[in-house]
Length: 124
Ligand SMILES: [Zn+2]
Image (cartoon, rainbow, N blue to C red; front, side):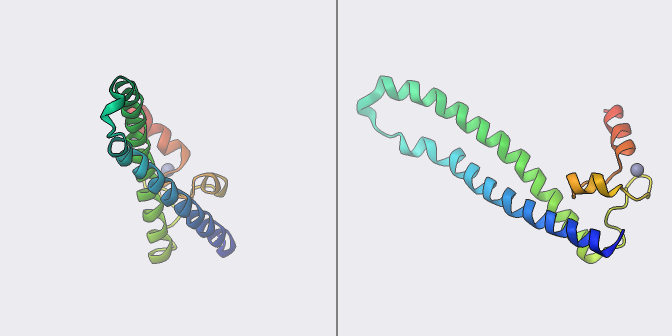
């Protein structure tokens, strides 16, 4: 991989990291704050109806939290590798071949090439 490409992917990773961190903060708020705010018992019947959607919203937020959290872990791992073992970055964990730049540009934190990933998915 060329230095120029590596720098480009570093920027992509940092961008994605910032975006994911922001999304996590927002989701964290959505997942924890909704129940605390609806403490008004005078609107009890309405409150019950509200609660239903809140719980759904909360579950959705929690699911997304997990997804974004996993993404952040992947991004951090890729950045660590990029800084500590730049020669290992962009190399498939499975077959040790270079992952095509086009694939890294789309998902800069992938750790395996397309055919290895497909083989893994096939196993499951
Ligand atoms: Zn591979």
